[in-house]
Image (tube, rainbow, N blue to C red; front, side, top):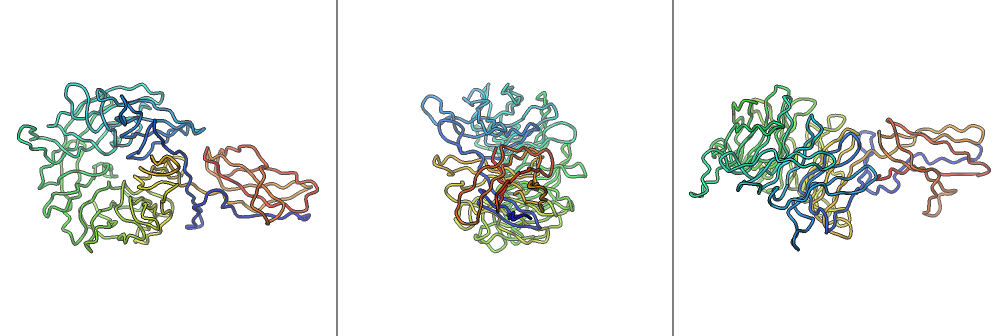
Length: 461
């Protein structure tokens, strides 16, 4: 090798590394929120085809000296944040739910309250460059307080839930009802599909999932036969079924949405567990209501799950907990379909606390947010759980070494080197290298150097 030394493994600047099924993932903080501006995100992000990230915050961009009523924001592929919409009451308050991309390229979301004509909440659309359109305004009897992202159905309509309201709502008599399931088109054509009253569930939590059989599945935190919550299914036309009532021994208070795993079956999480410790559990349920407890949280591996699980490779599922872990700031975890939990990240001051959810995006990586702390500003973060580059065996010929490494499309890398293993400083050898596939490469003419150690850094942007 003409005296050339090789460093065949990269950990580098991504401090939170882990090995799982021969894949290495690491946490990167992509953005730190600060005031004035969007702050304290309550949901995850959407990644569009150009690599931009879009999300909402229920606070931020102070109006008249206050804390502000929320924003829609964009982070471009070069890391620049811009505010697309500021909520001022007339166009809604407190957009806590995440966005979903429609077939027309617009992003669709909800504001928890506010809107014209004494509306209780609203559904809106926004273009990637910030053109905002009101789609629909809730008025109590058709639901209010939509707190979770809608789901794009196979028919092009959006399906979602509200935590309160529904048929029978009566503000005068103080009857709030337990929420609703609705369908809405891109033009704002609204259909109330179901109202929750207690016996059929109370306060739906998490986003709906449309299973391969065409029906939507979701959970309610309370109500049902025993008052501890339910799993339900509903057709696109509103035919409703309660498929399970939690009774306490099999868990209680499901506060997250469901996913349908690639291997089959629906998976979800509860805030309460069979041990009565209130740390939460992961369950699998069939479409006809057969429930299996997969795993339980014990505090050390997290507590109080949030968001929905996300499908990974090798039948792994990924998720977050709001609290627990090594620093009680929440965790990112993976879980096998037979219940083996691995804690991947324990959040702490500096990288954020209270993760809200993660989702897997088209580049194969997982993206999410933390609601508080992180960096010097304490207002939350956007993070990425990304594939760490692994250097493949190198080739050397005529004083030229060719480095190649695992990558993902759109990932930005930099090759660095140093002459020996002593010391901590590395020198940049390449500019920004943007991968166009699942590998990338770089050639170095090392000249008279007797040894050179390489590493490849994945940059945030």
